[in-house]
Length: 324
Image 1 (cartoon, rainbow, N blue to C red):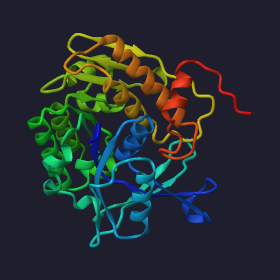
Image 2 (cartoon, rainbow, N blue to C red; image 1 turned 30 degrees about the vertical axis):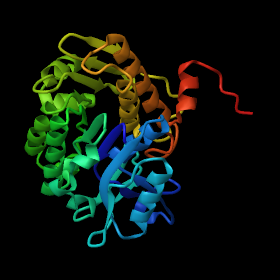
Image 3 (cartoon, rainbow, N blue to C red; image 1 turned 90 degrees about the horizontal axis):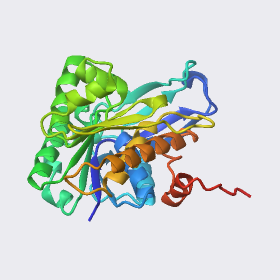
Image 4 (tube, rainbow, N blue to C red; image 1 turned 45 degrees about the horizontal axis):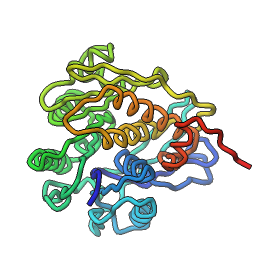
């Protein structure tokens, strides 16, 4: 049985090494990347059992994804091998402004072939939490149906759902559709965790607290907004709490910080009593989330810098780390 399950696409990640333009780089470093699998690895390193549902191609990239996730303790029983479609690829090029450019090669990928038929009750048996992102429904109509099928099944089984909008306009293309679909999904989930820009996009306000209040609709009981360098804030009908950002000594790679934040936040949500919003618990969840996001930026890669539980707890206690 898993504490958490999630679904989405994990891709082969190619990046120039050393940093520079892809067109003139002699070496492209290979890793894996995907918001949902980043979350799964983060939670697994924090001692939670996590299952990942997806598809990969019958190719070396797909094999690398399965091997990496299994090696990180993520359950891959529902990570199918599709011999008729390739594993998706993402190429990331460093930018002069610090924000990298991303080029997707995922149209027609194995993961984009997911549909509602991939969702069944056995997958959610004994699960405590379903974690979704707004990336998966942008991949294809089948993926969108799979997400809504997972939501309906979770409702039937009374399993709470967290939702990170993770808006990727390159995938959606049409901003109106992105806002409509993501807003619809958000209203069907118990906890919604947008970034500040995403909250503003979905609610037409730049005030994070007001945006959070506007997102507490439908089934949503709690909204936590990631505020970057100023921390994060959690909003419900009765509670507003915040936590400051954790200091980062040296930012190496900011990509993956939001997924690390989500892993930290969810790890504390799992410790809290269900059906009760505890302000002190929420502050602790925000503090851990902020710390997780900060720690991950200190290493290159989407997930490689995610901390193990023992290391994270030492840092939370303020213990000095002896390196030699």
